[in-house]
Length: 590
View (tube, rainbow, N blue to C red):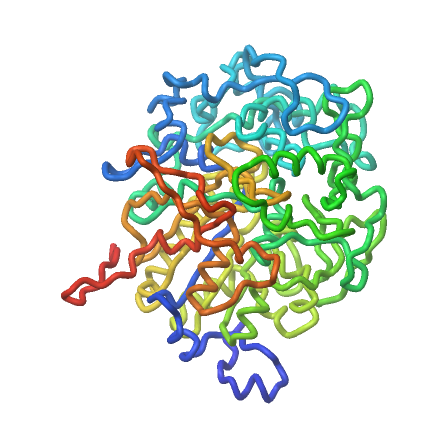
Protein backbone atom coordinates (compact mmCIF):
# COMPACT_ATOMS: atom_id res chain seq x y z
CA UNK A 1 0.00 0.00 0.00
CA UNK A 2 1.36 3.42 -0.94
CA UNK A 3 2.25 5.91 1.75
CA UNK A 4 -0.73 7.93 2.90
CA UNK A 5 -0.67 11.63 3.68
CA UNK A 6 0.55 12.23 7.17
CA UNK A 7 -0.94 15.65 7.77
CA UNK A 8 -3.13 15.75 10.84
CA UNK A 9 -5.61 18.15 9.28
CA UNK A 10 -6.23 15.77 6.40
CA UNK A 11 -7.09 12.97 8.79
CA UNK A 12 -9.47 15.17 10.74
CA UNK A 13 -11.12 16.37 7.55
CA UNK A 14 -11.75 12.78 6.53
CA UNK A 15 -13.29 12.02 9.89
CA UNK A 16 -10.59 9.50 10.76
CA UNK A 17 -9.77 9.42 14.44
CA UNK A 18 -6.20 8.23 13.96
CA UNK A 19 -3.24 8.79 11.69
CA UNK A 20 -1.55 6.14 9.63
CA UNK A 21 2.03 7.39 9.58
CA UNK A 22 4.52 9.10 11.85
CA UNK A 23 4.57 12.84 12.33
CA UNK A 24 7.45 14.96 13.47
CA UNK A 25 5.69 15.84 16.72
CA UNK A 26 5.15 12.14 17.45
CA UNK A 27 8.80 11.16 17.20
CA UNK A 28 10.03 14.25 19.06
CA UNK A 29 8.17 13.33 22.25
CA UNK A 30 9.84 10.00 22.98
CA UNK A 31 11.64 9.54 26.29
CA UNK A 32 14.61 7.87 24.60
CA UNK A 33 16.44 8.29 21.27
CA UNK A 34 14.27 5.43 19.95
CA UNK A 35 11.74 6.78 17.46
CA UNK A 36 10.80 3.41 15.92
CA UNK A 37 10.17 0.03 17.56
CA UNK A 38 9.95 -3.04 15.34
CA UNK A 39 8.67 -6.17 17.10
CA UNK A 40 9.39 -9.40 15.20
CA UNK A 41 7.45 -12.45 16.38
CA UNK A 42 8.30 -15.97 15.27
CA UNK A 43 6.90 -19.14 16.74
CA UNK A 44 7.42 -21.90 19.25
CA UNK A 45 10.89 -22.08 20.77
CA UNK A 46 12.03 -21.79 24.37
CA UNK A 47 15.23 -20.05 25.39
CA UNK A 48 16.95 -23.38 26.08
CA UNK A 49 15.72 -24.82 22.79
CA UNK A 50 17.53 -22.08 20.83
CA UNK A 51 20.10 -20.67 23.27
CA UNK A 52 20.70 -23.70 25.52
CA UNK A 53 24.28 -24.00 24.22
CA UNK A 54 25.03 -20.26 24.03
CA UNK A 55 28.24 -18.96 25.68
CA UNK A 56 28.01 -15.20 26.33
CA UNK A 57 30.95 -12.78 26.38
CA UNK A 58 33.37 -13.22 29.27
CA UNK A 59 31.88 -10.45 31.40
CA UNK A 60 28.34 -11.83 31.11
CA UNK A 61 26.44 -14.74 32.67
CA UNK A 62 23.48 -16.72 31.44
CA UNK A 63 21.19 -19.40 32.83
CA UNK A 64 20.91 -22.15 30.23
CA UNK A 65 21.57 -25.84 29.71
CA UNK A 66 25.28 -25.27 29.22
CA UNK A 67 25.87 -22.94 32.17
CA UNK A 68 23.89 -25.23 34.47
CA UNK A 69 26.01 -28.22 33.46
CA UNK A 70 23.02 -30.09 32.06
CA UNK A 71 24.88 -30.46 28.76
CA UNK A 72 28.46 -30.11 27.62
CA UNK A 73 29.64 -27.89 24.78
CA UNK A 74 29.45 -30.82 22.37
CA UNK A 75 25.80 -31.39 23.34
CA UNK A 76 26.43 -34.55 25.33
CA UNK A 77 24.94 -35.00 28.83
CA UNK A 78 26.81 -32.82 31.33
CA UNK A 79 27.74 -33.38 34.97
CA UNK A 80 24.36 -32.02 36.12
CA UNK A 81 22.22 -33.84 33.55
CA UNK A 82 20.10 -35.20 36.42
CA UNK A 83 18.62 -31.70 36.90
CA UNK A 84 16.63 -32.15 33.68
CA UNK A 85 15.68 -35.84 33.84
CA UNK A 86 12.06 -36.34 32.87
CA UNK A 87 9.64 -38.09 35.19
CA UNK A 88 6.50 -40.15 34.73
CA UNK A 89 3.32 -39.66 36.75
CA UNK A 90 0.49 -41.88 37.91
CA UNK A 91 -3.11 -42.05 36.89
CA UNK A 92 -5.10 -39.12 38.22
CA UNK A 93 -8.84 -38.85 38.81
CA UNK A 94 -8.95 -35.07 38.59
CA UNK A 95 -6.70 -32.59 36.84
CA UNK A 96 -3.52 -31.79 38.74
CA UNK A 97 -0.52 -29.67 37.85
CA UNK A 98 1.58 -31.81 40.22
CA UNK A 99 0.47 -35.41 39.55
CA UNK A 100 2.05 -38.16 41.63
CA UNK A 101 5.48 -39.10 40.30
CA UNK A 102 5.99 -42.80 39.63
CA UNK A 103 9.62 -42.68 38.49
CA UNK A 104 11.90 -41.37 35.78
CA UNK A 105 11.83 -42.49 32.18
CA UNK A 106 14.57 -45.01 31.49
CA UNK A 107 14.88 -43.51 28.00
CA UNK A 108 12.92 -40.81 26.26
CA UNK A 109 9.88 -41.90 24.26
CA UNK A 110 11.14 -41.87 20.68
CA UNK A 111 10.32 -38.58 18.93
CA UNK A 112 7.45 -38.81 16.46
CA UNK A 113 7.04 -37.49 12.94
CA UNK A 114 4.61 -34.87 11.73
CA UNK A 115 3.42 -33.95 8.27
CA UNK A 116 6.53 -32.04 7.12
CA UNK A 117 9.43 -34.25 8.22
CA UNK A 118 9.66 -36.06 4.88
CA UNK A 119 8.69 -39.30 6.61
CA UNK A 120 5.26 -40.87 7.02
CA UNK A 121 3.34 -38.76 9.56
CA UNK A 122 2.51 -39.86 13.09
CA UNK A 123 5.07 -42.66 13.38
CA UNK A 124 8.31 -42.95 15.35
CA UNK A 125 10.92 -40.68 13.81
CA UNK A 126 13.66 -43.16 12.88
CA UNK A 127 16.17 -40.36 12.41
CA UNK A 128 16.38 -40.28 16.21
CA UNK A 129 17.44 -43.28 18.31
CA UNK A 130 14.88 -45.11 20.43
CA UNK A 131 17.20 -45.04 23.46
CA UNK A 132 17.80 -41.32 24.00
CA UNK A 133 18.68 -40.50 27.60
CA UNK A 134 15.69 -39.06 29.50
CA UNK A 135 16.62 -35.41 29.25
CA UNK A 136 17.75 -32.73 26.78
CA UNK A 137 19.37 -33.92 23.56
CA UNK A 138 20.98 -32.03 20.67
CA UNK A 139 18.65 -32.20 17.68
CA UNK A 140 21.44 -31.69 15.16
CA UNK A 141 23.32 -34.78 16.34
CA UNK A 142 20.69 -36.67 14.34
CA UNK A 143 19.28 -34.34 11.68
CA UNK A 144 20.80 -31.34 9.86
CA UNK A 145 20.07 -27.86 11.19
CA UNK A 146 17.91 -27.09 8.15
CA UNK A 147 15.57 -30.04 8.79
CA UNK A 148 11.92 -30.22 9.77
CA UNK A 149 11.25 -31.76 13.19
CA UNK A 150 8.24 -32.94 15.18
CA UNK A 151 5.94 -30.55 17.03
CA UNK A 152 5.57 -30.96 20.82
CA UNK A 153 2.18 -30.33 22.50
CA UNK A 154 1.78 -26.78 23.75
CA UNK A 155 -1.72 -26.17 25.02
CA UNK A 156 -2.77 -24.41 28.23
CA UNK A 157 -3.47 -27.19 30.70
CA UNK A 158 -0.71 -29.36 29.22
CA UNK A 159 1.88 -26.63 29.77
CA UNK A 160 0.89 -26.16 33.42
CA UNK A 161 1.49 -29.88 33.90
CA UNK A 162 4.76 -29.91 31.96
CA UNK A 163 6.16 -27.32 34.37
CA UNK A 164 5.09 -29.37 37.43
CA UNK A 165 5.16 -26.43 39.86
CA UNK A 166 8.57 -25.27 38.70
CA UNK A 167 10.31 -28.65 38.53
CA UNK A 168 10.08 -28.70 34.71
CA UNK A 169 10.13 -32.51 34.69
CA UNK A 170 6.92 -33.66 32.96
CA UNK A 171 7.45 -32.51 29.38
CA UNK A 172 7.78 -36.00 27.95
CA UNK A 173 5.04 -37.54 30.13
CA UNK A 174 2.46 -34.94 29.12
CA UNK A 175 3.37 -35.51 25.48
CA UNK A 176 2.71 -39.23 25.53
CA UNK A 177 -0.38 -39.27 27.74
CA UNK A 178 -2.21 -36.17 26.51
CA UNK A 179 -0.56 -34.89 23.36
CA UNK A 180 -2.42 -31.94 21.89
CA UNK A 181 -5.55 -33.00 23.75
CA UNK A 182 -8.67 -34.96 22.83
CA UNK A 183 -10.34 -33.16 19.97
CA UNK A 184 -13.67 -34.85 20.54
CA UNK A 185 -15.45 -33.74 17.39
CA UNK A 186 -12.58 -33.87 14.95
CA UNK A 187 -9.82 -36.42 15.47
CA UNK A 188 -10.75 -39.91 14.27
CA UNK A 189 -9.31 -43.15 15.66
CA UNK A 190 -6.60 -44.26 16.30
CA UNK A 191 -5.81 -40.88 17.91
CA UNK A 192 -6.58 -41.38 21.57
CA UNK A 193 -5.23 -42.17 25.03
CA UNK A 194 -3.15 -45.06 23.73
CA UNK A 195 -1.56 -43.13 20.88
CA UNK A 196 -1.04 -39.37 21.01
CA UNK A 197 1.49 -39.41 18.16
CA UNK A 198 3.91 -37.63 20.47
CA UNK A 199 7.25 -38.66 21.91
CA UNK A 200 10.27 -36.99 23.45
CA UNK A 201 10.69 -34.24 20.86
CA UNK A 202 10.05 -31.60 23.57
CA UNK A 203 13.52 -32.30 25.02
CA UNK A 204 15.38 -31.43 21.82
CA UNK A 205 17.61 -28.34 21.65
CA UNK A 206 19.85 -26.57 19.13
CA UNK A 207 23.47 -26.11 20.16
CA UNK A 208 25.13 -22.79 19.37
CA UNK A 209 28.41 -24.12 20.78
CA UNK A 210 28.36 -26.72 17.98
CA UNK A 211 27.52 -24.26 15.20
CA UNK A 212 23.71 -24.17 15.25
CA UNK A 213 21.83 -20.87 14.80
CA UNK A 214 24.96 -18.84 13.94
CA UNK A 215 23.07 -15.67 13.00
CA UNK A 216 21.06 -15.61 16.22
CA UNK A 217 24.32 -16.21 18.08
CA UNK A 218 25.98 -13.28 16.29
CA UNK A 219 23.07 -10.98 17.13
CA UNK A 220 23.25 -11.98 20.80
CA UNK A 221 27.00 -11.38 20.92
CA UNK A 222 26.76 -7.96 19.33
CA UNK A 223 23.50 -6.69 20.79
CA UNK A 224 21.44 -7.62 23.87
CA UNK A 225 19.74 -10.85 24.92
CA UNK A 226 17.31 -11.52 27.76
CA UNK A 227 17.55 -14.85 29.59
CA UNK A 228 14.48 -14.09 31.70
CA UNK A 229 11.77 -13.25 29.14
CA UNK A 230 8.58 -15.33 29.12
CA UNK A 231 5.48 -16.15 27.13
CA UNK A 232 2.43 -14.41 28.60
CA UNK A 233 -0.01 -17.34 28.70
CA UNK A 234 0.54 -21.01 29.30
CA UNK A 235 -0.49 -22.53 25.98
CA UNK A 236 -0.32 -21.83 22.31
CA UNK A 237 -0.11 -19.23 19.60
CA UNK A 238 -3.53 -17.60 19.57
CA UNK A 239 -3.73 -16.54 23.21
CA UNK A 240 -0.14 -15.30 23.22
CA UNK A 241 -0.52 -13.16 20.09
CA UNK A 242 -3.62 -11.63 21.66
CA UNK A 243 -1.59 -10.87 24.79
CA UNK A 244 0.99 -8.99 22.73
CA UNK A 245 -1.83 -6.80 21.44
CA UNK A 246 -3.54 -6.24 24.79
CA UNK A 247 -1.50 -7.32 27.82
CA UNK A 248 -4.63 -9.28 28.65
CA UNK A 249 -6.68 -12.36 27.75
CA UNK A 250 -9.65 -12.47 25.37
CA UNK A 251 -13.04 -13.85 26.42
CA UNK A 252 -16.29 -15.15 24.99
CA UNK A 253 -18.91 -12.42 24.73
CA UNK A 254 -22.24 -11.45 23.27
CA UNK A 255 -22.23 -7.90 21.92
CA UNK A 256 -19.21 -7.15 24.10
CA UNK A 257 -20.71 -8.44 27.37
CA UNK A 258 -19.26 -11.62 28.94
CA UNK A 259 -21.39 -14.65 28.13
CA UNK A 260 -21.26 -18.40 28.48
CA UNK A 261 -19.82 -20.23 25.46
CA UNK A 262 -21.34 -23.30 23.87
CA UNK A 263 -20.89 -26.30 26.16
CA UNK A 264 -18.65 -28.12 23.69
CA UNK A 265 -16.21 -25.18 23.74
CA UNK A 266 -15.57 -25.17 27.50
CA UNK A 267 -12.38 -26.87 28.69
CA UNK A 268 -12.52 -29.96 30.90
CA UNK A 269 -9.02 -31.29 31.63
CA UNK A 270 -10.18 -33.86 34.18
CA UNK A 271 -9.07 -37.32 32.96
CA UNK A 272 -11.52 -39.60 31.28
CA UNK A 273 -12.25 -42.76 33.32
CA UNK A 274 -9.67 -45.54 33.05
CA UNK A 275 -7.10 -43.28 31.37
CA UNK A 276 -3.85 -41.77 32.52
CA UNK A 277 -4.48 -38.04 32.17
CA UNK A 278 -6.46 -38.18 28.90
CA UNK A 279 -8.57 -35.02 29.21
CA UNK A 280 -12.32 -35.09 28.78
CA UNK A 281 -12.56 -31.97 26.65
CA UNK A 282 -9.58 -30.10 25.23
CA UNK A 283 -8.82 -29.59 21.58
CA UNK A 284 -8.95 -27.23 18.63
CA UNK A 285 -12.61 -28.12 18.15
CA UNK A 286 -13.22 -29.53 21.60
CA UNK A 287 -12.87 -26.89 24.30
CA UNK A 288 -10.77 -23.75 24.75
CA UNK A 289 -12.64 -21.47 27.22
CA UNK A 290 -12.23 -21.40 31.02
CA UNK A 291 -14.23 -19.61 33.72
CA UNK A 292 -11.29 -19.27 36.09
CA UNK A 293 -13.27 -17.31 38.69
CA UNK A 294 -15.25 -20.49 39.39
CA UNK A 295 -13.22 -22.75 41.70
CA UNK A 296 -15.48 -25.69 40.84
CA UNK A 297 -14.62 -25.49 37.12
CA UNK A 298 -12.36 -28.31 36.01
CA UNK A 299 -8.68 -27.48 36.35
CA UNK A 300 -9.16 -24.12 38.06
CA UNK A 301 -8.53 -24.98 41.70
CA UNK A 302 -5.33 -26.88 40.87
CA UNK A 303 -3.79 -23.83 39.24
CA UNK A 304 -5.15 -21.23 41.67
CA UNK A 305 -3.96 -23.18 44.72
CA UNK A 306 -0.43 -23.13 43.38
CA UNK A 307 -0.54 -19.43 42.54
CA UNK A 308 -1.82 -18.53 46.00
CA UNK A 309 0.91 -20.60 47.65
CA UNK A 310 3.68 -18.54 46.06
CA UNK A 311 5.41 -15.47 47.56
CA UNK A 312 3.86 -12.15 46.70
CA UNK A 313 0.29 -11.26 45.92
CA UNK A 314 -1.21 -12.92 42.85
CA UNK A 315 -2.15 -10.27 40.33
CA UNK A 316 -5.72 -9.30 41.21
CA UNK A 317 -6.58 -12.72 42.62
CA UNK A 318 -5.71 -14.51 39.40
CA UNK A 319 -7.06 -11.74 37.14
CA UNK A 320 -10.28 -13.70 36.62
CA UNK A 321 -13.50 -11.69 36.38
CA UNK A 322 -16.74 -13.36 37.54
CA UNK A 323 -18.77 -15.28 34.95
CA UNK A 324 -16.16 -14.66 32.25
CA UNK A 325 -14.90 -17.45 30.03
CA UNK A 326 -11.38 -16.72 28.84
CA UNK A 327 -9.79 -18.12 25.69
CA UNK A 328 -6.65 -20.03 26.64
CA UNK A 329 -5.86 -21.73 23.33
CA UNK A 330 -6.29 -21.24 19.57
CA UNK A 331 -9.54 -20.15 17.96
CA UNK A 332 -10.16 -18.21 14.75
CA UNK A 333 -10.58 -14.46 15.12
CA UNK A 334 -13.82 -12.57 14.76
CA UNK A 335 -13.59 -10.62 11.49
CA UNK A 336 -12.87 -11.19 7.84
CA UNK A 337 -10.31 -8.97 6.09
CA UNK A 338 -13.01 -6.52 5.02
CA UNK A 339 -14.32 -6.12 8.58
CA UNK A 340 -17.35 -8.38 8.37
CA UNK A 341 -18.01 -10.33 11.58
CA UNK A 342 -17.71 -14.08 11.25
CA UNK A 343 -20.54 -16.37 12.41
CA UNK A 344 -20.39 -17.55 16.01
CA UNK A 345 -21.81 -21.03 16.55
CA UNK A 346 -21.14 -24.28 18.39
CA UNK A 347 -19.36 -25.69 15.35
CA UNK A 348 -17.49 -22.54 14.20
CA UNK A 349 -14.78 -22.26 16.92
CA UNK A 350 -14.37 -18.55 16.37
CA UNK A 351 -13.64 -15.99 19.08
CA UNK A 352 -16.40 -13.34 19.08
CA UNK A 353 -15.26 -9.79 18.21
CA UNK A 354 -13.36 -8.27 21.11
CA UNK A 355 -13.71 -4.84 22.69
CA UNK A 356 -10.89 -4.91 25.27
CA UNK A 357 -8.32 -2.12 24.79
CA UNK A 358 -5.33 -2.75 22.53
CA UNK A 359 -1.96 -1.08 22.07
CA UNK A 360 -3.21 -0.05 18.61
CA UNK A 361 -6.06 1.89 20.22
CA UNK A 362 -3.68 3.65 22.61
CA UNK A 363 -1.22 4.56 19.88
CA UNK A 364 -3.96 5.81 17.59
CA UNK A 365 -5.54 7.95 20.29
CA UNK A 366 -2.14 9.59 20.87
CA UNK A 367 -1.60 10.12 17.12
CA UNK A 368 1.35 7.71 17.10
CA UNK A 369 1.63 5.68 13.92
CA UNK A 370 1.64 1.88 13.88
CA UNK A 371 1.29 -1.11 11.57
CA UNK A 372 1.01 -4.86 11.86
CA UNK A 373 2.74 -6.64 8.96
CA UNK A 374 1.77 -10.28 8.35
CA UNK A 375 3.32 -12.70 5.90
CA UNK A 376 0.82 -14.04 3.37
CA UNK A 377 -1.37 -10.95 3.18
CA UNK A 378 -2.09 -10.05 -0.42
CA UNK A 379 -4.76 -7.40 -0.25
CA UNK A 380 -7.90 -9.11 1.01
CA UNK A 381 -6.70 -12.62 0.10
CA UNK A 382 -4.94 -15.23 2.19
CA UNK A 383 -2.34 -17.78 1.19
CA UNK A 384 -0.69 -20.75 2.85
CA UNK A 385 1.87 -18.27 4.16
CA UNK A 386 -0.74 -16.44 6.26
CA UNK A 387 -1.48 -17.28 9.90
CA UNK A 388 -4.88 -15.95 10.94
CA UNK A 389 -4.41 -16.43 14.68
CA UNK A 390 -1.06 -14.61 14.40
CA UNK A 391 -2.82 -11.45 13.11
CA UNK A 392 -4.50 -10.51 16.40
CA UNK A 393 -6.00 -7.14 15.51
CA UNK A 394 -8.39 -8.92 13.11
CA UNK A 395 -10.26 -9.91 16.28
CA UNK A 396 -11.05 -6.38 17.49
CA UNK A 397 -14.05 -4.19 16.71
CA UNK A 398 -12.11 -0.94 17.17
CA UNK A 399 -9.73 -1.98 14.39
CA UNK A 400 -11.80 -3.98 11.92
CA UNK A 401 -14.82 -1.66 11.77
CA UNK A 402 -12.74 1.48 11.22
CA UNK A 403 -10.05 2.77 8.85
CA UNK A 404 -7.46 1.27 11.20
CA UNK A 405 -7.87 -2.06 9.44
CA UNK A 406 -5.77 -0.50 6.66
CA UNK A 407 -2.81 -0.62 9.05
CA UNK A 408 -2.81 -4.42 8.73
CA UNK A 409 -0.49 -5.07 5.81
CA UNK A 410 1.93 -7.57 4.28
CA UNK A 411 5.59 -8.15 3.46
CA UNK A 412 5.46 -6.09 0.25
CA UNK A 413 4.44 -3.02 2.23
CA UNK A 414 7.05 -3.78 4.89
CA UNK A 415 9.87 -3.84 2.34
CA UNK A 416 8.61 -0.63 0.76
CA UNK A 417 8.33 1.12 4.12
CA UNK A 418 11.80 0.02 5.21
CA UNK A 419 13.30 1.45 2.05
CA UNK A 420 11.49 4.78 2.42
CA UNK A 421 12.29 7.82 4.52
CA UNK A 422 12.63 7.21 8.22
CA UNK A 423 9.94 9.74 9.14
CA UNK A 424 7.46 7.77 7.05
CA UNK A 425 8.14 4.46 8.78
CA UNK A 426 5.61 3.65 11.54
CA UNK A 427 6.65 4.54 15.07
CA UNK A 428 5.58 1.06 16.17
CA UNK A 429 5.65 -1.90 13.80
CA UNK A 430 4.83 -5.54 14.50
CA UNK A 431 6.12 -8.15 12.06
CA UNK A 432 4.92 -11.74 11.81
CA UNK A 433 6.92 -13.55 9.08
CA UNK A 434 5.35 -15.71 6.39
CA UNK A 435 4.35 -19.12 7.75
CA UNK A 436 7.28 -20.95 6.17
CA UNK A 437 9.73 -18.46 7.74
CA UNK A 438 8.23 -18.17 11.23
CA UNK A 439 10.15 -21.11 12.71
CA UNK A 440 7.16 -23.18 13.87
CA UNK A 441 8.22 -26.84 14.21
CA UNK A 442 6.74 -29.25 11.67
CA UNK A 443 5.86 -26.69 8.98
CA UNK A 444 8.87 -24.37 9.21
CA UNK A 445 12.54 -24.46 10.16
CA UNK A 446 14.57 -22.46 12.64
CA UNK A 447 17.08 -21.56 9.93
CA UNK A 448 14.39 -19.84 7.87
CA UNK A 449 13.23 -17.70 10.81
CA UNK A 450 16.86 -16.89 11.56
CA UNK A 451 17.46 -15.82 7.97
CA UNK A 452 14.26 -13.76 7.91
CA UNK A 453 15.36 -11.90 11.05
CA UNK A 454 18.90 -11.32 9.77
CA UNK A 455 17.55 -10.04 6.46
CA UNK A 456 15.14 -7.66 8.20
CA UNK A 457 17.94 -6.28 10.41
CA UNK A 458 20.08 -5.76 7.30
CA UNK A 459 17.24 -3.82 5.64
CA UNK A 460 16.90 -1.56 8.67
CA UNK A 461 20.66 -0.97 8.72
CA UNK A 462 20.61 -0.19 4.99
CA UNK A 463 18.52 2.87 5.88
CA UNK A 464 20.96 4.77 8.16
CA UNK A 465 18.47 7.43 9.17
CA UNK A 466 16.07 4.72 10.31
CA UNK A 467 18.67 2.49 11.95
CA UNK A 468 20.10 5.18 14.24
CA UNK A 469 16.73 5.65 15.97
CA UNK A 470 15.28 2.12 15.89
CA UNK A 471 15.03 -0.80 18.31
CA UNK A 472 14.25 -4.20 16.81
CA UNK A 473 12.82 -6.57 19.41
CA UNK A 474 13.00 -10.19 18.25
CA UNK A 475 11.05 -12.92 20.02
CA UNK A 476 8.55 -15.75 19.51
CA UNK A 477 4.94 -16.13 20.57
CA UNK A 478 5.50 -19.07 22.94
CA UNK A 479 7.82 -21.96 23.73
CA UNK A 480 6.04 -24.56 21.64
CA UNK A 481 6.10 -27.13 24.44
CA UNK A 482 9.89 -27.40 24.37
CA UNK A 483 11.78 -27.95 27.61
CA UNK A 484 13.27 -24.99 29.43
CA UNK A 485 15.24 -24.90 32.69
CA UNK A 486 14.38 -21.36 33.74
CA UNK A 487 12.38 -19.85 36.57
CA UNK A 488 8.72 -18.99 35.89
CA UNK A 489 6.88 -16.37 37.92
CA UNK A 490 3.25 -17.28 38.70
CA UNK A 491 1.74 -13.92 37.77
CA UNK A 492 -1.91 -14.95 37.51
CA UNK A 493 -4.11 -17.86 36.46
CA UNK A 494 -2.96 -17.62 32.86
CA UNK A 495 0.81 -17.65 33.36
CA UNK A 496 3.54 -16.75 32.92
CA UNK A 497 4.74 -19.57 30.75
CA UNK A 498 8.20 -20.80 29.86
CA UNK A 499 11.15 -18.59 28.96
CA UNK A 500 11.45 -17.67 25.31
CA UNK A 501 14.16 -15.76 23.44
CA UNK A 502 14.19 -11.96 23.30
CA UNK A 503 16.89 -10.07 21.41
CA UNK A 504 17.15 -6.28 21.37
CA UNK A 505 18.95 -5.18 18.19
CA UNK A 506 19.69 -1.47 18.05
CA UNK A 507 22.58 0.98 17.99
CA UNK A 508 21.44 1.67 21.55
CA UNK A 509 21.45 -1.97 22.74
CA UNK A 510 24.10 -2.98 25.26
CA UNK A 511 26.72 -4.91 23.32
CA UNK A 512 26.87 -8.60 24.24
CA UNK A 513 24.73 -7.99 27.30
CA UNK A 514 22.63 -10.78 28.83
CA UNK A 515 19.82 -9.20 30.82
CA UNK A 516 18.36 -11.08 33.78
CA UNK A 517 15.44 -8.75 34.57
CA UNK A 518 12.12 -10.62 34.64
CA UNK A 519 9.92 -9.84 31.62
CA UNK A 520 7.08 -11.20 29.50
CA UNK A 521 5.09 -10.07 26.43
CA UNK A 522 3.49 -7.23 28.40
CA UNK A 523 7.01 -5.82 28.79
CA UNK A 524 6.94 -4.88 25.11
CA UNK A 525 3.81 -2.85 25.82
CA UNK A 526 5.51 -1.25 28.83
CA UNK A 527 8.50 -0.29 26.68
CA UNK A 528 6.26 1.32 24.06
CA UNK A 529 4.19 3.08 26.71
CA UNK A 530 7.22 4.44 28.55
CA UNK A 531 8.89 5.58 25.35
CA UNK A 532 5.80 7.45 24.11
CA UNK A 533 4.34 8.64 27.44
CA UNK A 534 1.32 6.32 27.31
CA UNK A 535 -0.69 4.91 30.20
CA UNK A 536 -1.41 1.19 30.79
CA UNK A 537 -4.06 -0.13 28.44
CA UNK A 538 -6.68 -0.94 31.07
CA UNK A 539 -7.17 -1.33 34.80
CA UNK A 540 -6.46 -5.07 34.54
CA UNK A 541 -3.81 -5.37 31.81
CA UNK A 542 -0.39 -6.63 32.94
CA UNK A 543 1.38 -3.46 31.86
CA UNK A 544 0.17 -2.09 35.23
CA UNK A 545 2.68 -4.29 37.04
CA UNK A 546 5.78 -2.61 38.53
CA UNK A 547 9.30 -3.09 37.30
CA UNK A 548 11.02 -5.96 39.13
CA UNK A 549 13.27 -5.57 42.14
CA UNK A 550 15.80 -8.38 41.83
CA UNK A 551 18.52 -8.73 44.43
CA UNK A 552 21.28 -11.29 44.68
CA UNK A 553 24.00 -11.62 47.30
CA UNK A 554 26.12 -13.66 44.88
CA UNK A 555 27.15 -11.72 41.75
CA UNK A 556 27.93 -15.00 39.97
CA UNK A 557 24.35 -16.17 40.49
CA UNK A 558 21.96 -13.37 39.60
CA UNK A 559 18.44 -13.36 40.96
CA UNK A 560 15.77 -14.32 38.45
CA UNK A 561 12.71 -13.98 40.70
CA UNK A 562 11.49 -10.47 41.53
CA UNK A 563 11.32 -9.81 45.26
CA UNK A 564 8.28 -7.57 44.64
CA UNK A 565 6.44 -10.14 42.54
CA UNK A 566 4.32 -10.01 40.56
CA UNK A 567 6.47 -7.65 38.52
CA UNK A 568 7.68 -7.39 34.93
CA UNK A 569 10.31 -5.27 33.22
CA UNK A 570 9.83 -2.42 30.76
CA UNK A 571 12.93 -3.71 28.85
CA UNK A 572 14.82 -0.45 29.30
CA UNK A 573 17.68 -2.37 30.98
CA UNK A 574 18.56 -3.91 27.60
CA UNK A 575 19.66 -0.48 26.34
CA UNK A 576 22.20 2.20 27.16
CA UNK A 577 20.73 5.66 26.60
CA UNK A 578 23.38 7.51 28.62
CA UNK A 579 25.70 10.21 27.26
CA UNK A 580 29.27 10.61 28.46
CA UNK A 581 30.85 13.88 29.52
CA UNK A 582 32.15 14.53 26.01
CA UNK A 583 28.58 14.27 24.72
CA UNK A 584 29.50 11.30 22.52
CA UNK A 585 26.66 8.86 22.40
CA UNK A 586 27.50 5.43 23.78
CA UNK A 587 26.01 3.60 20.86
CA UNK A 588 26.58 0.22 19.27
CA UNK A 589 27.35 1.43 15.76
CA UNK A 590 28.40 -1.78 14.01
